Image (cartoon, rainbow, N blue to C red; front, top):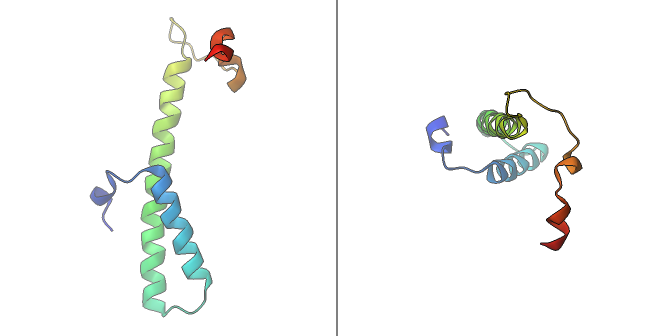
Length: 87
């Protein structure tokens, strides 16, 4: 699997693939070549997931910046609007 092949892979799909790889590797019935192939694919998927998480973190930071560009830390629930109950 090449990184460019991952451009359309969602975080959730990559996690599902990683779970399947782990299950297969834990079976202890794989030939060494197949185990190494799966391990390599897992590393690529893990890197893809890390990139997606970093992108999400960057988006959250942008959303939490005030008008002066200062990052304001607040609990997740603190962003809830009073009118959210009406939705």
